[in-house]
Amino acid sequence: MANVLLRSPYYISEDIGSDLSAKIEITIDGTLAYTIVKNKPANNNDFVLFEISELVRDYIDIKYNGSINASDLNVNVSYVLYKYTLANAGGTETNLGTTTFFGIDGYGYFEEGSNPSVTQGYMQSNDIIYTLYGEDIRIPVDRNEIKEVTYLYKGSQTFNKVVPSSSTEVFEYIEATDSFKERVIEEGGVYEEGSCINSFLQNNDLYLVDKVVLETGSELLKNGDFENDSFWTKGSGVSISNGSLNINSSVSTGANSTSFVPKVGNKYTVTFEITSYTSGLIGAYTGSAGVNISGTLNEVGVYTYTFTQGVTGNNRFNFYTNTGFVGSIDNVSIKAEGTELIPSIDLTSYSNGVGWFAGGNTPANTVITIDETSPIGDASAYNVTSPSGNGGYVSTTGIKGTDGEKVTISVWLKGDVDARFRLQELGGDYTNYFQENITLTTTWTQYEVSGIKARDGNPSRMVIRADGTSALDVDIWHPSVRLPETKIVDVITLNECKYEPIKLTFVNRFGALQDLWFFKKSIEKVNTKKETFNRFTINSQTGVYDTSIHQNQTFNVNSSKKLTINTGYVDESYNDLMQELMQSEQIWLELNSVVTPVNLNTNSLTFKTSVNDRLVDYTVEVSYSFDAINNIR
Image (tube, rainbow, N blue to C red; front, side, top):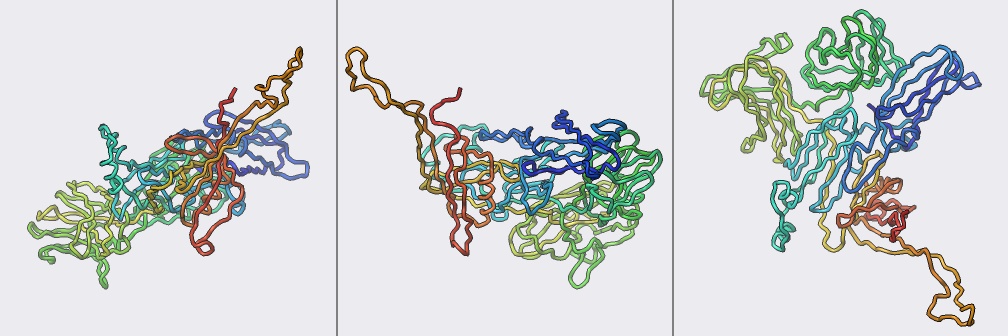
């Protein structure tokens, strides 16, 4: 589903033709929240226009006390449109379909046009994060766009997390424990403060990250939101209207995507939503006479499947029903599992130093033949044999561009032996970067393993071989070496010894709670406000007044505190981040583990660049959003 940014307007326009009125029913988190009826304008305009973002935004209530509850950051929205032959929702009613989306407390910029939404996955603007040594970093991601997050330090993996998708929540916060104290406590130990251990921790990094790799996927399908009638061929009883693929048929029919041309053997992830259901069964397929990806479906819901493309009649992703289906489909997305690096899937190919080759103690004794039956039933698989004691294997030639990167290798295998497949250094000492040891069966199975390729300057290669010196007899189909589609975020860890660093947490332009550290000098001020009156102090009987009594009496005294804080030197990409901070409506300050709400007093900021200013830093003023003396009644 789309992530709609609710601080910007969200317009819904519907052409109702000759009908006279329209109605919208808006459901938020499963409860009907609004019903709005509008009559067609008197100027013969056939369109009725609704704007609903402010109505939906009223249901978002973001709270922060040092921990984040991701479910507070979005609402689940669905709306149904109807049109009527008479004014004020009278006469004959026609259901125009249902649309669903996530609503988040973000905004778009003017240049981005109307109805802004976000599908970028990484829910921050800055690609460089500055963090304080010994503190966790929290990274907000869209859990339906990011599949996996890996922390690296000097090219080595230090943390990894698979991000589960969700039909109810947008945000997932990636947090990795990086303090020695927290690790001791998590393991059930008791952490004792001491000068020796503190000195050790200041000079020894027990956990570090300098790069965060967020695995995403590139969108390959056009018009998956069915905003128009393009990029799909439709069978009998199939139409595209009101932002949905609508099927109304009691016999076999379907719809083919014309924009997505998959590559045989590659892996893809498809997500789609059945937004309405009346009857029948529907399924997703890899192409004409292809594999049923989803099974047969018969209820409303969001569905996600991963598939490997085989050879089909036309290699076109499609929805198909064999017995009829009445319902609507929306929000179709197909993403690649990564960038393919393997020189060829033909194990007999070798030309000009590129392709595959056979190896072993006696390379000629490792034999590769084709025409084996593949998992999809054709004769495109290979058989590799090598006698016992030969250490036989097949290997790609050198693959470049993987230094320090996360790499995924996969292959379909079948046999009756123990085997290994690995990513190995080609050159140097032939380091095995990572591998998978498997006991094969006589059934085709796809195996996959991922790891980090060291920064050694040498190319890598994929190797498939027997276990040890055993004989090799294995069928192989569609080996793959790929780099996932990724977003790279650099992390710079600072250890501030002179000043007390202060952390602000604010709602950024994507509706996410984001941390921002201010490392340098801070100045605290206190402002008081009060009222006074002239007090009558004369004794009415004697005409004498007491000199110890205030003549100018003060009352309703209270105070508020302000802080001026400085980031220290940062990258000029922080310009966007500082603008978002100034545009945020909710900000919290954390100092010495105490979280308090604050307001930003700074109303103007001059963007800095390394060209104009040489060094970039920012100073802002915040005030605590409460009075110092408790006066809440």
